[in-house]
Image (cartoon, rainbow, N blue to C red; front, side, top):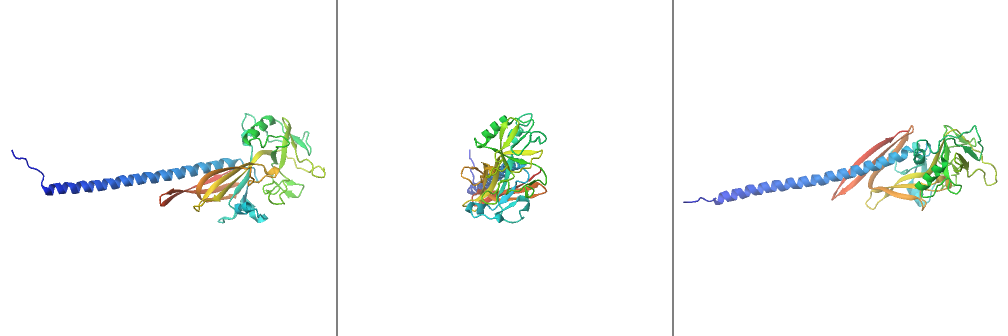
Length: 319
């Protein structure tokens, strides 16, 4: 019995077909893998940008109205500061790159909302037992407020005379001594300038469980300092600043500064200010404010071999 084998031509033909199939398959496998790497990078940078944008929204939601400003970060780092190196955020021009930071005083929502009833009520009873040294805040539990503030600030604020909280009375068109409008200067937000007086943000401590006393009740000549005490107030234990800082690769890292007290003369650039890097490889950090609504945009880059993957997130913060 004779058995017929494959001819040389048939073998060559099969090898050619197998080579073509192998080539196509390897290209498909490589393409699938490249797409996977690309999609993973896009997801990674998109997820990180979304998380950081949400963190910024959460913090800015509890800003005290009128305290939000922007600074020329490089000028403040160099120490050569002038009055033109900061602006209220609503005055920051669009399209510029001078004012890169955003800074604000955040009211203490953690102790305010930690119980069924607020631990500091936000109400000043100015019809009962009010003077230029202290006021009663009915419905408050300032002992618990002090404990929460101390835990959050690592002991830097505990509602004692040596570690006071900051207080701002909340009224529209409110003036201090009939001439000094509530502004970032009198709130102590620019302590590097000699004109920053801290006259309208008041350090306070709790002398009882429902009353607050001003630590700066008198000036250096022992004269009682004039104050406006209105019905509503906000209590704070920290200010916050967010600033982009240059990286060696030409991009930026976004840095959060916290746990500093402008009412005590602190700056966000002090050595003992808490500093955290929120994200790296930032390419865009822009913000603006109009009518009390803050809009900001973040763009971040993920390095992928010789290529970069970028994504952007935009958020609006309404009060």
